[in-house]
Length: 337
Ligand code: SF4
Image (cartoon, rainbow, N blue to C red; front, side):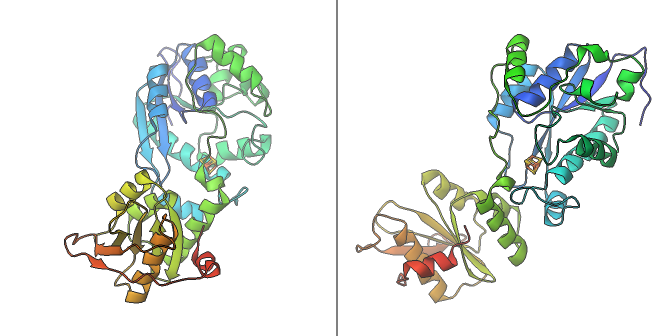
């Protein structure tokens, strides 16, 4: 890594989540005359940054590098070195992963250090003193990772030690309270941010069940990862799964992300859920089970209504299914989450 040049203006990579803490960290460092380049990580089930993140980058007046976490990240989730939190969230490994990528970006973009909005003691798993140290060490950013919100409570970074960053202008926030951070936001003019607890899906136990199911039975492409956060999920066999949309947006998303070989099912003459039957060559029995699920989650559960189906790649060849009656307990057995 390059040595800090005392004569040159400094440049930092600022991790931006869209939340308040990362925005504050950027703003504080900008206030010290440092040029900041934002970096945002997109988790595998998303395909674009949220509007709030783009707005935040604009508000902070920083260019934004978007990094898509894909297969390598999923491999990390399967077997995190430091374990999981409440659900399937490998927060320590996730922080290390993001910081390793930020370090690579720091080197290629000729920046001097990386900043994050981490606050000592804010999250029990990944932001206690010991883990902050571990994360810094394992990311390879030793001495070049500045956490401006808690810097005064942590060992000085290389930048503070050699005096290019004035430690006195940094902060000593700790713990879970938001009030100090919120008043700093007011002072610094940050108004529009994602509220805390906006939720990483990995901390959701139902989402974790879907992800585990996907890892167990495999998937054919990224579109199946995107669909993890859409609809109700049912496992019919080792190779077949049904997803039933819960509203119009989910119906469109299912159709948009369907694999050409997936079977699409919908009520023939009425509005209602759209379902995708994923997997190769499903049997007629599976199609009829999926058709029942379409009716089960529509207004026509106990009324006459045809369900039609077609292969995504062949929308002109539609047929009528024979929904196979299932007991509620059988539906529950098939439900993944
Ligand atoms: S909450 Fe999610 S995104 Fe945040 S560190 Fe944990 S796993 Fe990563």
